[in-house]
Amino acid sequence: MVFNLTRKISTIVLTLALLLAIGWGLWERANRLTLANAVEAGGQRDFYNLLNYVEQAQVSMGKSLASSSPRQQAVHLTEAWNQAAAAQLSLSQLPTPGIKPINTSKFLAQTSDYSNYLAQKLARGGELSSQERDQLARLRDEMKRLAGDLRQTEAQVASKGLRWSSFYSTRMPAPLRTIANLAVPVQAQPGPLDGFVNTDRRLQTLPSLNYDGPFSDHLEKPRPLGLKGGDVSQAEAERRATAFANDASNSNYRVQATRTSNGLLPTFALNLLDNRRPNVMVHVDISKQGGEVISLLNNRPVGAPTLDAAKALERATAFLKAHGFANMQPTYTVRTDNNQVITFAAKEGDVILYPDQVKVKVALDNGEITGWDATPYYMSHHRRQLPTPKLTPAEARAKINPGLKVEGVRPALIPLPGGIEKLTYEVTTKLDDTRYLTYINAVTGEEEKVLQIVDVPGGQLTM
Amino acid sequence: MDPYRRRLIIPAILVVILIGAALWQFYYQGQAPRALPTQAGVPVAVGDEINLLARLIAAEAGAEPYEGQVAVGAVVLNRVRSPLFPASISGVIYEPWAFESVSNGLIWQVTDLASPTRAAADALNGWDPTYGALFFWNPAKPVSPWIWTRAIITQIGSHVFAR
Image 1 (spheres, rainbow over the protein chains, first blue to last red):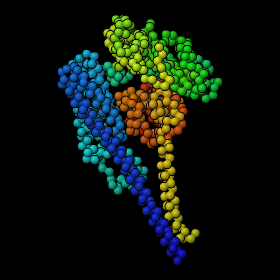
Image 2: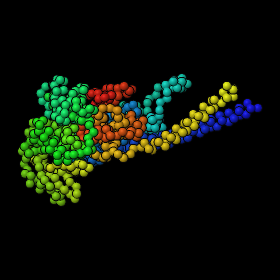
Image 3: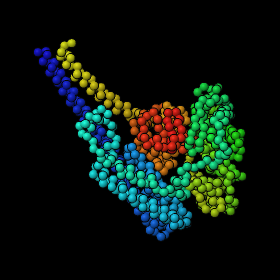
Image 4: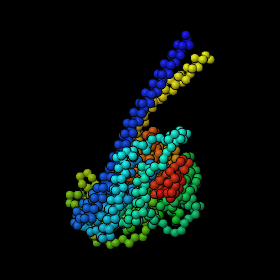
């Protein structure tokens, strides 16, 4: 009797538990499907955006080739610039696991950048050379083929052969997978992303594209221009790093570890430990060629400030002078946490050389130099043949839109996309409460560039 | 032990597991919103994107040496400037499968942002201990074999950096 009752109870409990488990499973499944649909929608959106933008870009590039008026050409190239850039963004957000279509991405970015370069050239009154037209036609043909490939993938997407959300599922544990494979053997099928892989492989073989823009192939591996002499030994690098760090912190360091680094600027990378303060560590990079101090970073958290920005600037200038950078102009300063980061540019006579920059970070609690970055300086500093200006500062000033209030004019060498440098007059202007820097070419009088000063908390230009 | 008691063991365990699972589920769901990104306590120094960058650094390299943290930030910024990757910090960080911590949600759970925020500021101010790296990975973990075809620059802490 008692036995029967407990048996009944256990059956009821078991049934309830089973129902609960099933209900819970169904609820989880419903949640998963909602999320999967959202992910699928995102993937579909990115894919159709990609297809659309590639087709539009192809059409815009074709129109610019067909048009005979430079103004119309510039309009279509500007469209192609935006459309190719949008296509690259959509491609990068597409979930394609295991493959990274970097060549497709590069092709889209370069085409976008190249269209922009040509549009700018036309806007300045230039004309497309026959080489540039050929180049553009070649890129248009590639864009057309890409659109064709994507349309094929689209057929797959439309017939549900390709589901973006399926790439997010967690893999089954290996033993279960083996059992599943025994039950239903997997047949070798073309993967859903093979189209992408083939397209990407084809785009890898494109000839290199050289022009005056940031994504030009000739800029992919810049060489440091500011390093001279032969390679230094590791012992010499360690000696120089320790001396530099000792001076920066007014303390005493010992080498903890040294490794080598083969980036764009090959260096010995050293970790130094402070002999006087526990847990203070400094990281210093010494260039292999010439043994120059490229970078220093101190990991110390900085306490409440006792110095102001002016004192920090004084300290940084003195430190630069002590290390052979006598003629440097502070151009920008920003306060992050309790550190003042000051950007200096080299000067040749009274011309500011904006490419040759050194950044110095000063801790505002005790004036210690906690950061140094001379990478831009050593990448670009070399003996230059500066052209003789044909304009006077007053003439440059006269080129400015009369609605703007001019606050200052000074000569400056500025870097432009494509690794080009131009001698200009930097005119600081103010419109309402916003400041602008306008760069007037000192030889041709053309306006090269306008910069808007974006106010960030703690950041300011130093004049 | 009585035979019927023995028979009760399995349903009892089932019930315990189920209640446990349900509790865990609700606890987890209750916790999740609290772990969502908050800007409290993170000073905005260079731009709005410093928060995003600091969070990624904390999730990817929270236990790495300081220059390893700056290096991870620099890789993100090098990608922004490269034609192979999207042209914005958020585009680079949220590229599918670009960073493990975004795929597994660790980026939303990090709490110690003091050192990563300083590292993010240094990276945004131009420091790059890798001199142009575009990729990094932990050689102790399984990674796509494709990644080893890139030119290796150096190793900082437990991460290998490459172009």
